[in-house]
Length: 115
Length: 115
Image (cartoon, rainbow over the protein chains, first blue to last red):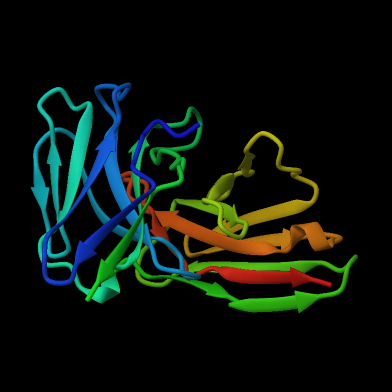
């Protein structure tokens, strides 16, 4: 079962910031928050991840609350090409599977960027 | 960097035949690869995890004798759907990780249609 809760859909005006929330109240100390997005009929695209500090890269910013129970992905200037399903995932490490944890995808948030 | 390819992108086969899907990490060595399946209007479902040189670990409910996974090198994993049936028609997506972080990079997916 997914360990995160996201709104099923959101709209955003082109050029405005898109703020996508995610709740992960049962996150444990060594689990990261990952964000991916999936444009229709394509493989998911990695956006950003974080442990407890806020993070920023060329695609987005990730704001994680101090208690780590929720986070917000920010797309500073949304474009029509940002229309996609956005997945917030908490990563855990599976026993015996090396150093890479499994990603369990929930239903995500469908972001529709409108002109 | 971190490019993952899949081949073929689309395949149509007759019921009862076997289909092989390749997943390659093009610019990094992938110690761990994952296979997912996605049905229309649903989220990605993890099928199995494979570490190079080891047997794959399958998720509960996934038949290991039907979905054969081979991860013979650090850049290639294959998924063979044996004795395919129409209900196996789906979007199959692989991902790869270096193992030093939990970040997975996804391939573009393979659309399988079984007639």
